[in-house]
Amino acid sequence: MGSESYQLLSKIATNDQHGENSPYFDGWKAYERNPFHPTKNPHGVIQMGLAENQLCFDLIEEWIKNNSKASICTLEGMHKFREIANFQDYHGLPEFTSAMAKFMSKVRGGRVRFDPNRILMSGGATGANEMIMFCLADPGDAFLVPTPYYPGFVRDLCWRTKVQLIPVHCDSSNNFKITREALEVAYSKAKKDKMNVKGLIITNPSNPLGTTLDKETLKSIVTFINEKTIHLVCDEIYAATVFSSPTYVSVSEVIQEMKCNLDLIHIIYSLSKDLGFPGFRVGIVYSYNDQVVNCGRKMSSFGLVSSQTQHMLASMLCDEKFVDKFLLESSRRLSKRHEKFTKGLEEVKISRFPSNAGLFCWMNLKSLLKEETIEEELKLWHVIINEVKLNVSPGSSFNCFEVGWFRVCFANIDDETVEVALKRIRVFIGKETKKKVEQVKRWQPNLRLSFTSRRFDENVLSPHNHIILSPHSPLVRAT
Image 1 (cartoon, rainbow, N blue to C red):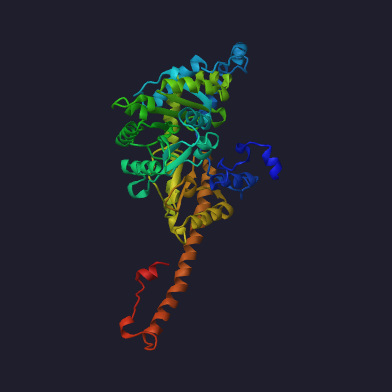
Image 2: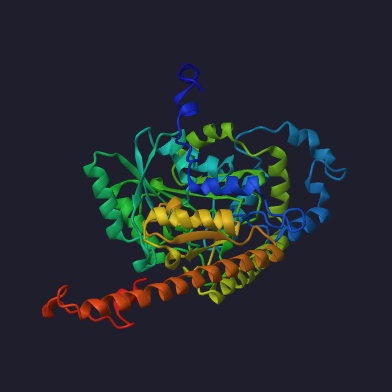
């Protein structure tokens, strides 16, 4: 497009700040160009970069068959068609917001209650994240965000709002814990750089780590934002994906046990991950701030959940017997799939970060890098995409400051495809290991020969410069 055409469009239409130029999204495009299919395209790219929960669709389908009246598009439910088709109140169907409040409470162990009148709807978590930014920040304002974090935050939080993100550096030396010290460092630097810090956004459970925050860390975070008088946005969209101990602790539970300014606390939720309904575009903002609720309610006009979706989900989420069965079975199946996949990684000596939640693993491939640089990480990622034919996401796209980490999703494919993926990984690691062994064999004899000949050449080395390398020398092992 020429410069004259560009002048006809807005800055949003012509800038590259959507975030699509990230390797995270490039991997998706590689899959879309050559998608794996067990019979039609068995050598295609397997999609392991998409955090979707497809393990319990059979339970959902069974419920739909047994509850046809929940849909206005069936004979049994058609009597509600006119009422639901004409409904457009941006407060939402009362039965839907009430059911959502109960479901959110159940997912959090029933240890906290949610007020249906504080539930704001939006088009998925993407819309909910953007809505809360519009309510809390002006263009140029900044939010702290601990690393590593979801690459889509650049799009969700910043693209149209013009909000800036300030990374809070976390690393594996303390299991990527969000410490008070790390928060203070990031906050102080932002202030020094004349940035207006409006808040902190955290994900719990974490994407990409697949871990949950403990109560003490959450209390420390709430204390920090309370002292700084900045907002805390808690992305809790993976709350029901916890499949092993420790149990999940929500910020809503923590603030019941300590004094803080509730006007600063906001939760993002959706049904995309916990129920596996990304296409239903059910995003929720739950705010303890009355002004945010009032403003967000008006903004929800731009991204309401369709009335027929609300109607069906209200019926489903009110079915307590079904919800209890689903949550229990979903956790069991996630645990089983996680165990199957991680055991496959362990068999080929691939380490991964210990996790108890989420739809993915955070695996460490640092040993395969020639050098510990982002460039080498991306080279390895290109090999995995183009040769191994697996779409995994490099850690650098999650703003991870340690190279060699990759997020790999395991809940969006069936058991047979998991086996194909693990087989490809085994073959790839086998080839890489063989290459390294051959390199060492070629290099070590030359090294010993070189130093042996020089040791006895008095014209080259003086007696003070003699160097003898054993096969166990660190220099030899460095290959």
